[in-house]
Image (cartoon, rainbow, N blue to C red; front, side):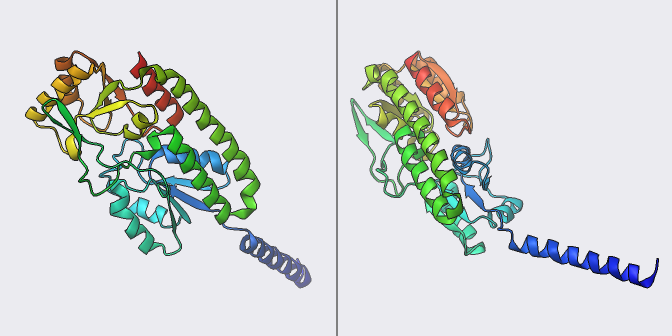
Length: 295
């Protein structure tokens, strides 16, 4: 090949490389957002419609009260632009400040902001009376278990996505309307199903369902007092309370040891039901919990 031919090929290759670099340089960087737990991951992915990458800080099976973030996950989360926080989970209190320091451009969106939060949701029993303990430093963090508050959390996620990526506003709005309608449908189904049982009590190992119970006028008896393992004396008192209240089911979250709950159920004469409020398929799990309570 002559010198002119080689020069032409080199010039063509150089122009092609410059064109690729220019195109890659002008292409917008794909946005990543982070969430704490799988239910929020589900909602964020539905809202985004594939437009952004969603990273879940606490994986399926992890305990969001005590999960220890590995270095590899820290690197992944440090690349995110938005972080959707439940607001008061133990993991968030431990790690969000560190994540924000590692990524100054990270915008933390507290999904609990402006919501009616519950305090003192652990019930202490004294004889025949029940008293709410109001000394907790933090509100009950399990806000996502309420279908009614879930709609407001999703709305906050939607608005933050539009603000961060206005070019996708049409996509986000359509997906938000669809998801909000689904959450409204879940609330409507549970309202109809649970209305006849207003005032009825259930037991649960860890007080995860406080907001769910508040939505539908139910009573939650928690076997774990103030986040601590129950003593035999406390369990005996709870057994008496559950019998008086006519408790028929005790819910056990899969991240906790079920043996104490099973012993409690035998003493009360009720059944146990394994639940997963942290399930990615949030709508199905919330309806499954309601069905188990009604049964």
